[in-house]
Image (cartoon, rainbow over the protein chains, first blue to last red):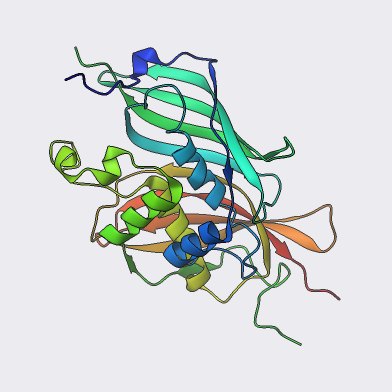
Length: 136
Length: 149
C-alpha cells in the first residue's frame, strides 16, 4: 500500500503559484453558513464577507499538488475589496511569499487572492501556516 | 426616528462588549467541513487525531473566526454596518469539541471615510474559552453608516 502523497515544508517552493478550480456561490452556501454562525447580513442574496475565504480553504484541497501537511493555521491578514452576491463564481490563487524554518516544523506565509468571474480580485491577504517537516 | 441600529456617529472609542457563550459541537465542525470543503484530518479524523499533540479533533480556525463574527452581532445592539473591510487575525489555541467560547470586543479607533455617508470603525476582539484562555484574537475594520442628517 502506498501512503497518500503529501506536501511537506521542504517541498514548498517560494514564489510558485497555485490556482484552484472555481465555485459558484449559491443561496444554499449563504443559508448554511448563516445557520451555522449567525453571521451575515439580512439580505440573502449577499454573500457574508468571511464565507469566500472559508470556501477558498476547501478549494485549496482541489489542486494538483498533494495536500500540505498543515499542523496549525496561525493567522491571516485579510482585505475585502468588493462585495460578492449569490450567483458570482470565485476561484483563488496563491503564492508562497515566505518560508521560515523552526526546529521541528516550518512557517509558511502564502499570499492569497480570491478572484471573481470578471477576473477582479475581490478579497486578498496573507495566510500563515505551521507546516510539518518531512519525517526523517 | 430610531431604527434600533447604532450609527458611526454614536459609537465611541473605548466601548466594550461581551457576547453570550457558545458551545462548539461536533455538528458545527462537520457542517463547516461540508460547507467549506476543508476535510483536513485535523477536523475530521478522530482516530488520527488521538495520536496528535491535540489528542482529538479540533475546530477549523476559520470556523472560530466565523463564530465570533456571529457572536459580535449578539454582543451588542445592532450596528448600521455596511461591510467588513479587513482583519488582522491570530489563531492562538485550538477550539475542541465541547468548548464554550465567547467574544470580548472593544472599539479602538474611528476614522472618517472619503464617502460622507459612512466611517470606518476598528474593533479589537478576543475569543476566549471556558477557562478564559484566548483562543483567537485580532482586529476588524468595519464600514458603518452615518446617520443621515
